[in-house]
Amino acid sequence: MYVRDRPIEAEARLRPKNQLTLPEAIVGALNARPDDVLVFETDPTQPGVAHLHVLPREYAGSLTGVYGTTEDVLTFIHEERAAWGGERAAED
Image 1 (cartoon, one colour):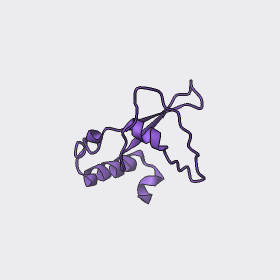
Image 2 (tube, one colour; image 1 turned 60 degrees about the vertical axis):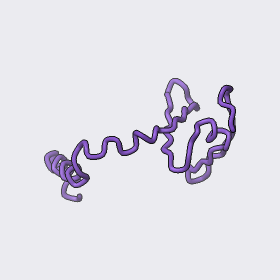
Image 3 (tube, one colour; image 1 turned 120 degrees about the horizontal axis):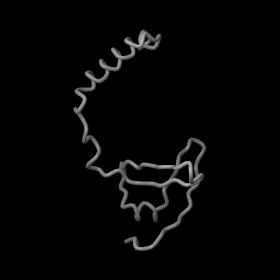
């Protein structure tokens, strides 16, 4: 059981491939679980500071189908790129 009524500070080392292992105390304080999506936020007015949030699980997939099927979305993107007249449209 983790105490969540006080600030927690923990260190982690960034590995060569930008991998990071979250300390157990932070995972517990966030009530994070395997496969949770973590969101990091930075603010240019606070250099060197990042805020970490666990994306609520009910958000995952909540907009699926809003813009049609995956095929519909890809078709739209290809048509838009072609309309721009750019070379990338032909490469896709």
